[in-house]
Image (cartoon, rainbow, N blue to C red; front, side, top):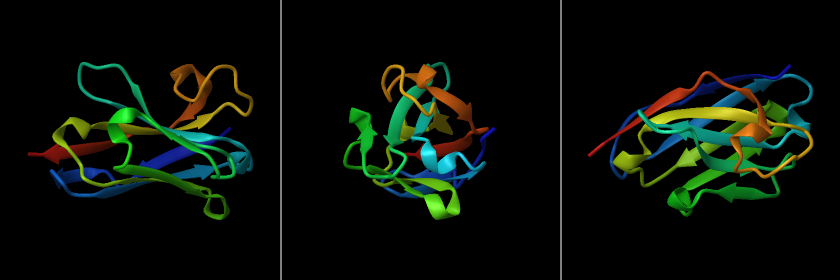
Length: 126
């Protein structure tokens, strides 16, 4: 199995930055695409960003393009989400997730992901 533990969340003022980290255990980490989703109160869990197993390809939801950057360090079994120019609407619990080794739909589909972290709270004040 893949165990995922997020860290780096917290309270930040609008316009500020945070970097989330996701530490993964398991030999299979480097072979899996990874993603970040978020869930705000009363809303569905939504796709934020994804990254290929090698780190060579990334995807973002429109609302975070140009502000967020996903990256990974396979030697450290860690994936990151750098969040800049944060807005109050970014407030949510952020979840790190490991995609299935073989795609069955798209990176935007929550059902594509096999393992999930516990989530880390990001709160952006106005």
